Length: 108
Length: 125
Image 1 (cartoon, rainbow over the protein chains, first blue to last red):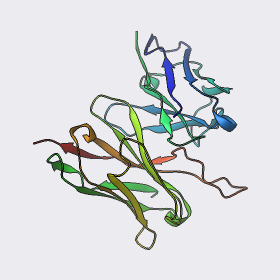
Image 2 (image 1 turned 135 degrees about the vertical axis):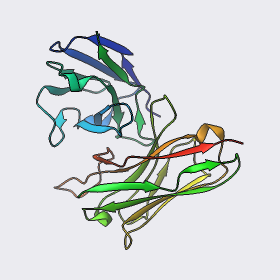
Image 3 (image 1 turned 30 degrees about the vertical axis):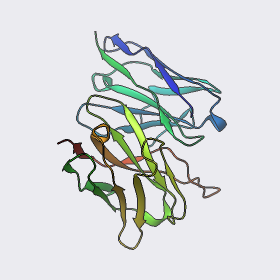
Image 4 (image 1 turned 90 degrees about the horizontal axis):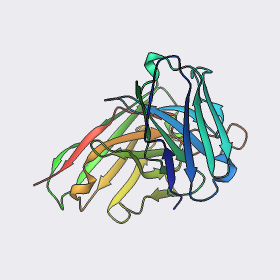
């Protein structure tokens, strides 16, 4: 099983600041089959990024995914008030498909 | 409207059974792989099970293998999860989630581009 580790656990930032979230895999993720999701309290997750760097439909360009192999990054260039949430990475290169534990981005 | 609507959650005793359903609408259900993903209260996301477009291939997390069965009825646009031998640690919100297809190859990519709102399963005596 591929174990995903996300850091930091919590990121405290102000609106307008840049957020950098890390996702590290215990083994190489084939074909960069890595996705990122955003989840707000009481809501289902929303797909942000797939294939490590492709934005999903309707996702603003302030969200950028990068990385390959075992190291991946989600960058939010300028945090809007609606971006404070929990972010999960997920690998889908090999079953079982696994999620990271999440990074909470909260308001400083 | 493109949507997934889960139902069938509730309170069940340890060792009991429950069947979840997920009704799909607004897209051609039978052309997409489908999944169940769960989230225990205050915890992260856990992929539970996936099923291919035809239903011929199924996949499970080790934590549910042998106890849960995923199935689908493409004529009814519905996904199911039969859960047997339930344990307290199965308590969670269960989400139904759709996996997209590669436009060129037609193969499924097992990330989740459409989610339902979830149904809560509580296993307790």
